[in-house]
Amino acid sequence: QVQLVESGGGLVQAGGSLRLSCAASGSILSINYMGWYRQAPGKQRELVAKITIYYSGGNTNYADSVKGRFTISRDIAKNTVYLQMNSLKPEDTAVYYCNADIMAVIAGGYRDYWGQGTQVTVSS
Image (tube, rainbow, N blue to C red; front, top):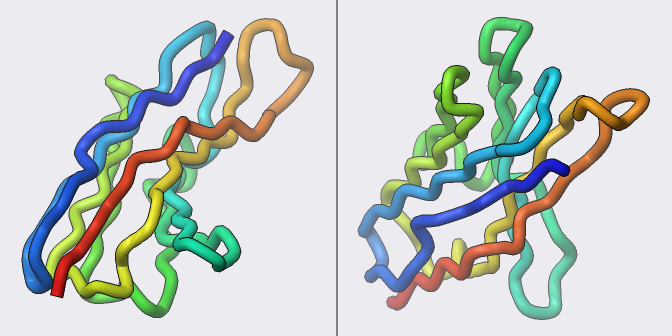
């Protein structure tokens, strides 16, 4: 059983900052990558940022809309990723979901896991 537990969402004024955390727990053999998606009302879920975990030196990938404002980082020992969000804009308002590609003890290979989501609201 693998779980992703998110924290750190909330309400912030435009220009402010928030930090999201996502910790993976359970019978984990390996983690390929972890990252964040977001979904605003009436819109499709979109990738925000992701980072490789155990391998590939922590390579990162960002959506163009957040480059230069958001930073994703990892703590390999804790199986945790962080999303530091600065210079937040009202259009960043969404539910943010943690996503991870994990090989668990029981599973036959890497599988996709999702967190429950955390609300980020940016007021103008």
